[in-house]
Image (cartoon, rainbow, N blue to C red; front, side, top):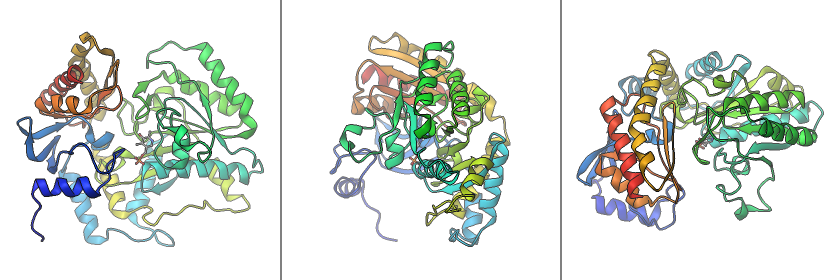
Length: 434
Ligand SMILES: *Cc1c(COP(=O)(O)O)cnc(C)c1O
């Protein structure tokens, strides 16, 4: 083993050589150095604001639903490690992948029958788009190649996903000319409990009808738009999309990478609307936050269509497709989730966040406070001061990281009531400071 780096050395090398998400090079703000994590706590190399442990209010971006260092997931990883961590998936198969795929088919809406296991959420969206385009080509309607989405969305950072991210938040102006040009509807009206909006429904229907001949698919995040702005909408909007897609022969892709596995209060957000997509993307919490893996599920109609085409195969096959280690942990994570009352836990967190975030509503610079399932959002009337907000939260012993005008939290489902109260207090403090 090499000598461990001092924190100073580590940060100097980090700043000089290592890209961070949406970061400049060299880095301008020192990240916190995490040495280990267990339960809902991140253990830091050096204290910040007097704390060497921070309660993780972010669940590592939606993914660590069971918390860190979970004995069941550790054991699944260890057992698989002793068999093999990876083997190519071309011409070979293995139990973790097969069992995981079968489990996903079992727990997702019934028409979804076939699973493509990819190595990140963005890639699963690429695969979804490729499936839809190839489907229409294969069934003799090659003009149907474009995508429609609504504004305010986020689907990942590779090119096809980027083309359906919110045009402003996704900085489309940087890429004009190179980014595929998709069709954008207005953002869905805000509020999970919003009354059905007839004018908005008409807008969606008209846009889909008008572009039906060139549309391969509509792609949206159901119920919660995550990294595009943490906005909630009525499940009614999804029913409108489903109907219009059926009427005009357009496929519907639901990106459940953030919303899947219970986060919004149902196992999948599509269940709020009682609809089923033609293609569904899963990721983030799929592995319980342990490893990178994502899945694209599709119906038999889509799979059969592709298989009848001139090129009767789905032309995609990443090197680490169906990675056994990630698949074994995913299977353990899904089974762990289903083995206890996750719905009760998410309800408990929802109630805790409602109570804990309510005081933020009294702050003059707060525009909105919203909670759905295990997701809490405080929206400011200005861009948050990242450094001041994270520092204020750290003072309360909590890790949260704002983006744009948003302070938000989606804690691990195992977060206890006391820790939840601290997360609430920390988000309020961050809102006041940022
Ligand atoms: C995070 C996210 C993605 C991208 O997933 P990566 O694993 O980061 O590539 C796509 N869609 C949604 C809704 C997401 O939240």
